[in-house]
Image (cartoon, each protein chain N blue to C red):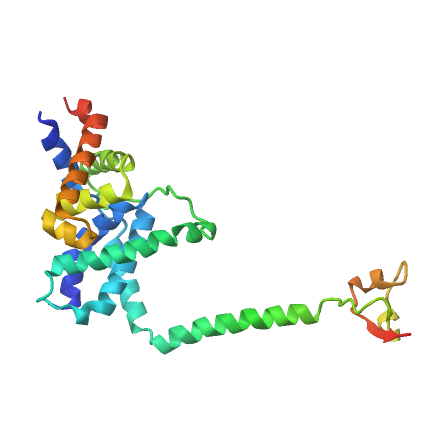
Length: 102
Length: 167
């Protein structure tokens, strides 16, 4: 058998799509085409705003270091019902606390 | 021609164009989907005076696939599915035909794996899509003689690897 003809036949044979790929791709295409462009952009923008909001929220709940003269203390509300070992900034792991300067 | 007609006429061709580039069916389906999305958006801009429909379709297909593979590495970081997934075939009621088809596809996949992306693309456009070398040159941006040389070398590589299996 001529090798070149066989290679040609091999390359011409191609692949068969599986699992109703043709129907699935067409359905997805039509769904996307029918979704208004504005809605698509709205979803993207909403996602970005959500990420920014989460990032700001996280930053605001972090303990901030305000310099060597700042003294971190706990309010009486925080102390009520809590069981603390040592006092000081370490106790703020579960309570952000209040800050006052000496 | 309506877009529906274009989809029906070109689906298998575009799927194989994508499959020749991709390692697996899932990726080929993603690429096929992306290509048809672009074709849908640009459908009204087709001008039959500038190029044949085939050339226009494959110029767009090529442009989409270049972007697709540029982002493949990025997508693979977020992918949780296996690259080699077992899929059902459409000819489950004819096991002999299924075996023959699977065998052919396996050989074809093995042949393509030894080739570069460019070689695979040109082989697909020539042998599967039955495009002329001038048309392939227009689609790929290469010269006609370059296309001929790449074709010849790619076929030679396959013959060297698999030629003895056909004796």
